[in-house]
Image (cartoon, rainbow, N blue to C red; front, side):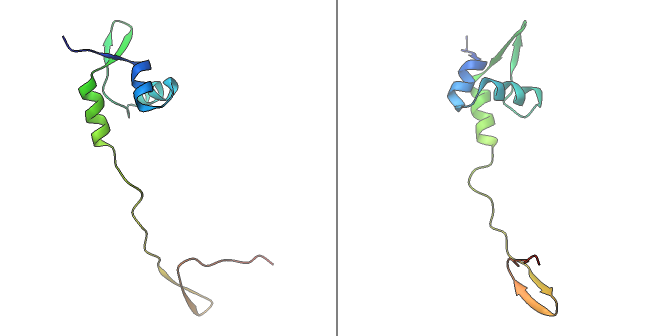
Length: 83
């Protein structure tokens, strides 16, 4: 029989709070889970699959758009000064 993980064990493995695990389950954005009566359990392979499906790395760099302000052309961030 496969070992099932408790909510607490999953939270500890992921270094997140128990509340986060429960919120993810409620919002259906966490790993798949099994209900055993009123108990919630996780299969280690479901946890690994979920982790593998998450995006990795930082955000993709965004190219600055050329903009025209007051007839002048700017590239990148335009700082607006308040008067």
